[in-house]
Length: 140
Ligand SMILES: [Zn+2]
Ligand SMILES: [Zn+2]
Image 1 (tube, rainbow, N blue to C red):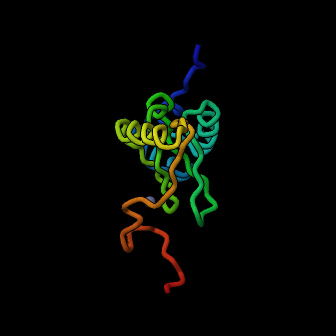
Image 2 (cartoon, rainbow, N blue to C red):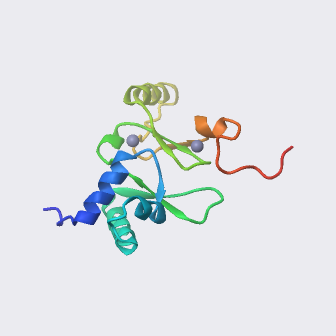
């Protein structure tokens, strides 16, 4: 039996689930969910993290900790692309994943573990000039 889920925890999980491609700091979440107290947000985030329902994300150049919903069931079937600039995770199409996994298996005789594999790079938005919230200081 699952442990009893409190109302704040449900709200929190639903919110993260509705924005599954985005990452939030505890502060950002408590700003959005005004009916949940800040301490409840922190408490529930760490409980959800232990359950494997959310994961911690760190961003380049930020000391703050961000959280993101982790759809454990669905996410086992496809690969993930993680943007190093904004910290967003993109869920690759299941078919695209299949193509890639099959190609690697055929070329390298290597069985890729899709649930453990994350591809790091820079997302489309962050490739645009000015699209990334963090600006480079030294221009060449
Ligand atoms: Zn996924
Ligand atoms: Zn990005």
